Image 1: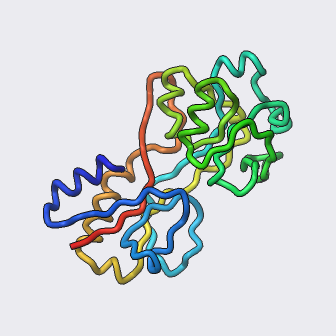
Image 2: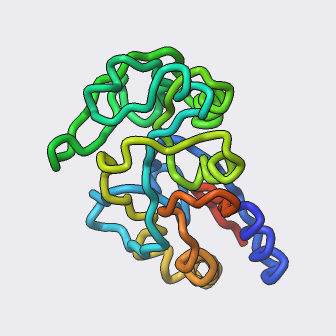
Amino acid sequence: MLPLLAEFLAAHPRITIDVTLLDRQVNLVEEGIDLAIRIGAMEDSGLIVRKLGSLRWVVSGSPAYLNRRGTPKRISDLSEHDCLVYSQQNTGSAWRLLDRGKQASIRVPVRMRSNTLDGVIAGAVAGTGLVYAPAWQIAEHVAAGKLQVVLRNHELPPLSINAVLTHNKLLSGKVRALLDFLVENLASKDFDTVPAFGKARTGRALAARTHK
């Protein structure tokens, strides 16, 4: 996202942008946000929503860890593994997966907890345990053979990546320019597929506040 915003600024020299990267949902009106990128179901019916793509969460571990502890084949196998939990994703130690075809919150043993995905992913790469993370964020590690995705049959359908803004902000020329730019540059990108070895991708999520 940040390199894309740099391109946008180069093309629009009279616009400045205040970018905030957050692991929580923002209130656009109360926090003065002109445009935000949100991942997941939308509950604010009063907002304008433009879909930019989709994102899948997957479980993975390092080959060394899986060789040492075994590769989980079923949801119940997670109870025998060390799990690295991203604490901002939910309030407890549950991972959202498919169990018998239905979405379920699976309680997992916590070896490490972090409020950043980078922290738990680094732990997984080091062989500390299993991690539940977005496919795009582990893509380079999968491509490099540092992480292996498991429990593929238990993954939830991908979540929508949306650009959201209020109706009054859509009337702003600078906000509309940024929205059109993001749609053009992100709608064709794949944040859903776990790459094969040698095929990595990157991405970030953001909330942006623009100024004249």
